[in-house]
Amino acid sequence: MDIYGRPDEVRLDERKLSQDLGVSRTPVREALTVLEQEGFVRSEARRGVFVIKKNKSEIVGMIHAWTALESMAARLACTRATDAQLRALRESFPEFYEGQPSEHIDEYSDANIRFHQRIIALGHCEPIAELTSNLLIHVRGIRSTALRQGDRAQHSIREHVAIIAALEARNADTAERLVREHGLGLAQHVDT
Image (cartoon, rainbow, N blue to C red):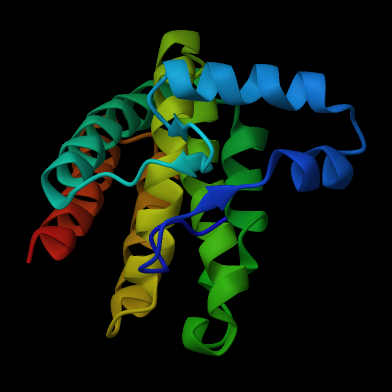
């Protein structure tokens, strides 16, 4: 769900969620309780459950946190990922090398998130993976929205290709720097 791509509040329908997921309402209620405790949703008596959208300052802070974690994961990937895993990174994202992303922005947006998740995974550091999983809910929506603005998608592709090359070369300093600059560019884009 793109929570930042729409101006109105996002209300979650417990009944519809249980139907869509094919489960009873009890596990849905339990999941919503956990999401509320983690600050992702709020419950309002007689109104329902609403997704909490972060303000611009909070979003920029989350991007900075994600960027710090992902850039460290990129550094770690240079020594921890296998050659096959690094080759698979390039092979898994033909979207970065073919066509125009603006023609298939939804597919590119999904590929973009998978790419960043893959870098986290290649770092083989469980604490980084756990910390980024909570940020992903908001970062996903932010990245998706940003890619639809101007030539951000084309710019993103060029940066991804350079990151992949640095990882394949096992150049930890360059990989870390490129991932950090990529994330900080998103933060700057959101902040303007």
